[in-house]
Length: 444
Image 1 (spheres, one colour):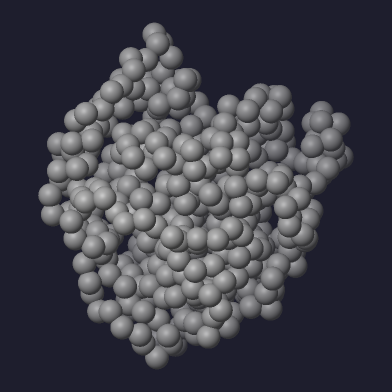
Image 2 (cartoon, rainbow, N blue to C red):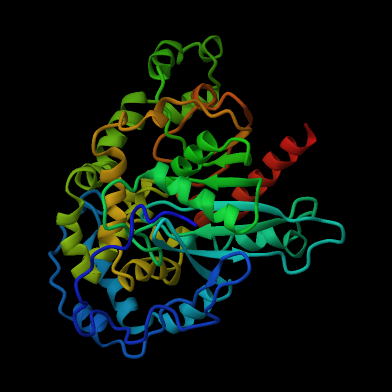
C-alpha cells in the first residue's frame, strides 16, 4: 500500500568475504508476512570465521599519542591498543548475537525500504491491563541495542521492583540507513521522512495512539512525528531537544537573577561559565558534525574499510558525550559506565552491516543547509511532552527553552546523573522518568 518513494540503495556487488561473517545478516527465524503486514525478520549476523575482521585488526597502524594528552586530541591510541586486543582475542560476538536475539526482530517494507525493528511485549501483563505502546528511537552513533537494558524495566516492571501501574509494549526501529534498516538510494531521507515511515510502522502494527521517546536524532524524529500526526501521539518524551529560540540572550542577562528571567539555580550551574559550557564545548564536540553535514561519504570510505578507525570514531563519542570530564582520563572513562562487550557490540552493528556511511548521510540530509532546511524546525509541538535533562548532555536546555517549542510540557526533570546515551547509560533513571511522565499525563 505504501508508495516506493525512496527505494533500495544501489549497492555494487560486495567483495568476497567483506567481513568476518559468511552467513547472511541474521540467521533466519520465521520469515513470512502476518495478518498485519509484518514480516518477521531474523536475528543478528552470526559469524562463522573471524578471519577478515581479525586480519584487519592485526594489520592496524597506530600513531603513538603525544605525552599527557589523554583524550584531549581524540581517542588515545595507547588505550585503543587495549580495546583492539580485547576485540581481537576476547570479544565473543556469538555470545553477543545471542543477547541481541533475546528480543524478537522483524522487517517490513515501508516506502520501498526494508525497515528493521524489535517489538517487545510484556511477558506477563497484569490482569485487565492493556500495555501502552511505546516507540523508542535511537540516534548516531547508537543503535536499537541502546535500549536493551531499559526494555525489561518498561515491559516487566514488577520483576524489577517497580509497580505494574504502567506496563509498556516497546517498539525500537532502526533509522533507515542504520544497522539492519535499508538505506535510501535517493536524496531526501531526512528526519521528517523517517518520522513518516515510523508512523506508518506503528499503524501497520495496529496502533492508532501511542507514546514516543527519543534522544539525539530520535528526539528530532519523534518531534517531527508529534508535529505531523498529533492526534495519534498520546505523549512525547525526550532526553534531548533541538530548540531554536532567543533564550540565550535572556540567560546571559538573567544569570545573576535567574528567577526574574524564568531560570533556576540548577540551570545556572549547568550552563555556567556560559562561554565554556556552551561555546567552547560545542566547538570541541561538533567537528564530526561539520564533516558529516557536508561530505559524509569521504570519511565514510575510511570508516567502512577500517574496523579500527570505525571503533575509534564511534567510541570516542561514548567517552566525551557521556561525561566531558572523561577527556582528562587516559582511558576516556569508557569502562566507567559501559563494558567493552556493550561498546563493541554497538560498533559491530555498524561494521557487520556496512552502514556507517549511510548513517552519516542523515546529517547531510537534515543539517546540510542549516537549521532552516524545512518548516518543521520552527513549528511548535502541541502534544503533551515530558523532558529529562541529564546533567552531562552535550548542552543543557532549561525548561524555559523547552517550553518555547513544546508549550504542552507537563514534566521537566533534572536528572541526578547521566549524559547523552541516557537509555544505555542510566536505564533505571530514564525508565523512572518515562513512567513519571505517563503517570502525570494519564491523571489529567
